[in-house]
Image (cartoon, rainbow, N blue to C red; front, side, top):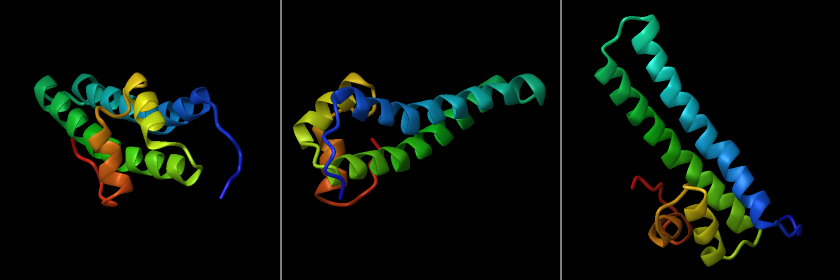
Length: 105
């Protein structure tokens, strides 16, 4: 376990880099499908959203587990996650910390 105290910025930055940035890249790549491979725009949008959502659910779980292993308080993590658009509610964090499940909503 790491005894380093992380600032809100450090926690949020890690979440943005490992959760939101790849989700954004996945969605933009799906838009590229519609432009370069002549895929219907609506289908490309649906594919991007589904793949982005699946990636989000697994990566946000890893981010929450990383934060809790580094002694970040759950309420603080929820506050940082909401501000950074990483989680929507305390239920998402509790799903990972208390039930060890992957969140989908």
